[in-house]
Amino acid sequence: MTTTTRAAVLRTPGEPLTVEEVELDPPQRGELRIRVEAAGVCHTDYHYMTGDMTCRLPSVLGHEGAGVVEEVGPGGRSGVQPGDRVAMLWRPHCGACPACLAGNPVLCRLGRVQAQTGGLPDGTSRIRRGSETLHHFLGVSCFADQVVVSEDAVVPVPDGVPAEIAAISSCAVITGLGAALNAVRDAAGRPLVVLGAGGVGVSAILGARLIGADPVIAIDVDQRRLDAARRLGADIVINAGDADPVEQVLDLTGGGAPWVIEAVGRPPTLQQALAMLSPRGSLVMVGLGAVDATFAVPVNLLVQQQRSIIGSLYGSSNPFVDLPRIFALYADGKLPLDDLIGERMRLDQVNDAYAGLVGGAVGRTILRP
Image (cartoon, rainbow, N blue to C red; front, side, top):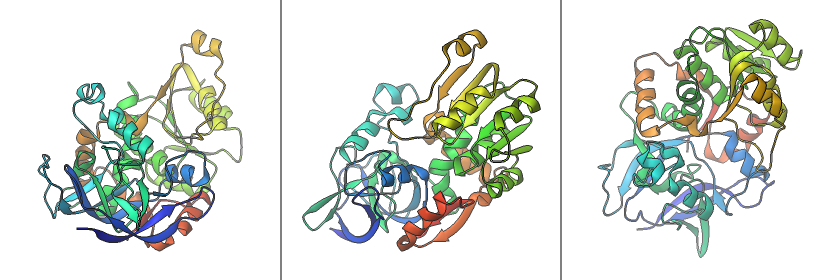
């Protein structure tokens, strides 16, 4: 049976999202219809809204969400039932491709299928408006009251974990925290720099505290975000608008940091991050940029000082293993994720939410359909 729902639709890059009434076809084999309880406002969507990155249009945006299962399609094998609470993932897990078999489902082949087709893992869409087909965004499209997603792209949410915490954990938290836990090695007692103190950056700071990095240095141009970073565990904060952050890091660390996590995704900040490294230091890149963005890497610098650059997608994590760990750490009081939440807004305020994001809003804005 077709379901009518509201959804925030991107029709033309550079123009505001439009909140429209659309139809959801029922979930097919191995799919779920979910009532969205919370959706995080992430900078990744903004890249597509501005045209820095492209997707099939028109598209229902939103990729950081959690909700309640309302309907299960035929032939499901995951055991998910109506009434179950789940977090939605923008990378599915087929379980059979080389990446999944190697324990690296964030590179599952179905992720490329969803990105290229604007559909679910079979390449087709369940969203339409009359005769017009609308596309899924990264297989999630949670800027809506209800969505249809693959059962291979959800993780159960335990009682005691609020929907908004589950939502931000499914992208921002696991990306930043995971980068510190999975991509960084031997950081205990050694300096670690986080460049960018947005949702992903402060999550990386939380991860840096868990692995014992010392000191943890946060860099941003917004003092409000830096104040939040200090509250969440940064030992030192540097306002890059006041003085050269590279010189400050080199001075504070006695010649450079062994680890820098870059959570901005802009060529100038990547250049700075590379320059902050000590010999044998590693730059971990987690921020996405424009599709054609590049930055210069001095060849001899990498060779002669044995520096390295590491790309970290989705926190180099296995979400089906790491998200339950994050939920458990939160439930045990070891991850203060409530402090990451900023404003709470309605779905029809989505454009206001993005205006706040690019204006330097502190904390992750949550849309509550």
